[in-house]
Amino acid sequence: MKRQTKDKLVFWLFLAPALFSFIIVVIIPFFMGIYYSMTDWQAVPGVAVNWVGLDNYRAMFSDIRFQYSLLRTFLFTLLSVISINVVALIFAFLVTREIKFRNFFRAGFFVPNLIGGLVLGYIWQFIFKSVVPQIGGTLGIEFIENLLILADPNLTLLGLITAYTWQYAGYIMMIYVAALLNVPQELLEASEIDGANSWQKFKSITMPMIAQAFTITSFLTLVTSFKQYDIIVALTNGGPTGIFRGEVVNSTELLAVHIYNVAFKYNNMAEGQARAVIFFLLLSVVSIAQVYNNKKKEIEM
Amino acid sequence: MLTKKRLSKILLALITVILFLIVLFPFFIVIINSAKSSLEIITNPIALPERWGQLIDNIVNIWTNPSINYASSVYASTIITVLSLFFISVFSAMAAWVLVRTKTRLSNFIFLIFISGLVIPFQVVMFPLVSLFRMIGANLNIQLLRSYQGMIFAYIGFGAPLAVFMFHGFIKSIPFELEEAALIDGCSKPRIFFSIIMPILKPIFVTICILNAIWIWNDFLLPSLILGIGQPLQTIPLAISAFAGSFVKRWDLIMTAALMAAAPIIIGFLFGQKHIIKGMVSGSIK
Image 1 (spheres, rainbow over the protein chains, first blue to last red):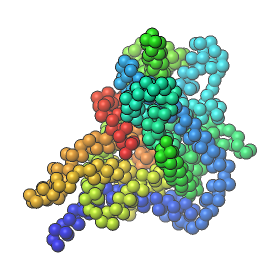
Image 2: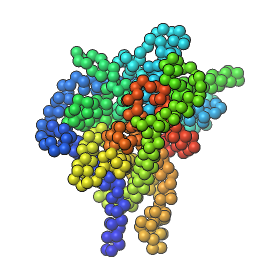
Image 3: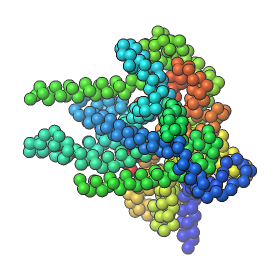
Image 4: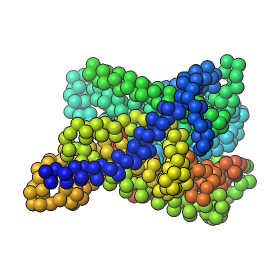
């Protein structure tokens, strides 16, 4: 009996610091957030909070800026997932060939991942604003010289994707490298003897072997693209403005930025919180669907 | 046949080198423009600097700049990162260990609560978190906003789920016999953990510290809410953001600031390259 009490004490003492911090920092604010999203909460101490039901959610769905932000976020996420995975796969194939200094190249491709999104955003802002026109000028190509990437809504989105791919592809590459190094060489050699060409080898041996890696990378890129905030704030700060269904909208105000702006720039905490709850739900649905889909595909292969 | 194979090899190497140069191009741009004056950078941002000594001038300029306050920002970033890493990894290892070794419905449930933290995005908790911290400050007189303790406390809470999850998976593979023998010898439970289990967990500690170090050092949104931008206590990303906001056109200094912000973490990477890459990849796969 005495030992059992002691064990219980150890259990709670060891658990307490991590569990306590986690509950205070994540769990309680999570439930507070769901409650606040159905009130007129202003985050001002002393101001009473009134229940408004689903008003914030209704306001959100009829808000054109929100609809537009949602569409742009989906577009950005889709294009980023494709761009990052394609670039990462190319990198991974190259640095797993028999070339000299491949570890050096691997490290080089990986390094941008260490740069924080904020610093990275400023660097790319400079590149798009000053360096690209200068390159155009030096090469004498007028089109590039006059290219104002950060002034056009669609080009800006592509610029964001470029900067983001630069940061993230090296990391995803490493996961593909780990998977590619797991492809048994004997299998490739055996198939070569049987007369398989490069494409057949790739399709029938390498592809299925990296399917496992693809589950991880597609999930990671999807979720992190969807949540992107730092790079956008530093690179475009949501701009430039565009027109959507007759209203002025910020063309790169993707969801994470939109939530922040609704709360702080447009001073509506409760509506910002309601959008954050939808953000959470979308992320959960997308994540679950993605994992489910990939698990199914793996088995079929 | 042999020449064809060799040709394709050369071609592959060439493509690799070209892509490598493209990837490193932004770094090149940052370095050359950190060594330019504000006039020089406007005239030609892709030319090599006229005088590399300008780099020192710019560094001194950033170092002494009151809004960036480099020395104190690096100090704050270092304190926050190191202490957060220490507490995240030790507390999470302790929690994971008792959760694995206590097989009750309660411990399963608590583990599930931790796991749920992995799918809760920061955005959905950030506004209430600030509110809650403010309430705690007003009612319990514990200063969590604009303070080291609040910042580190928040990182422990956000870092715990992944760390507990990773430790949990690893501890499950440690045979219980190891602990049993020590128990029979009269070793107390906390001692078993600190002198037997902790040393075995070393590889996971390294992985968790690397993953979290890169996250915490570069993090912007959470510190901007907890510490605020333009306050005396600020981390490197906050300082850069405050600085770039007030000097929108001073690209020479912004580039130098970017260089100085990235330098510590890149130097760290060069020292522990192998561990870092391995740790980050295994972290993502688990």
